Length: 87
Image (cartoon, rainbow, N blue to C red; front, side, top):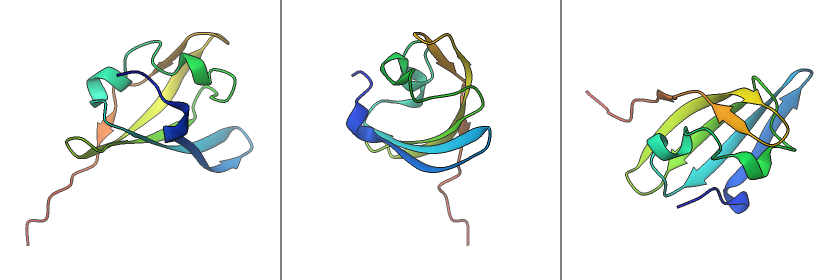
């Protein structure tokens, strides 16, 4: 699939950074590809953090915006949040 603006929600912001929630059926390997968030380039800033929720698998990961030229956005590979309960 591709980026869907309806899946991106700003949760919080402060001087120099924002926290976003992004819900998608895309795998993190798709979401972390350079250019995936290009349509949101006017909203995302370098060092913003996005919580990515893959509703298909399900998995949740943190990514951060590494670069934004104003038209091309690149995010980090992502850090998975463990969704297991060992007790």
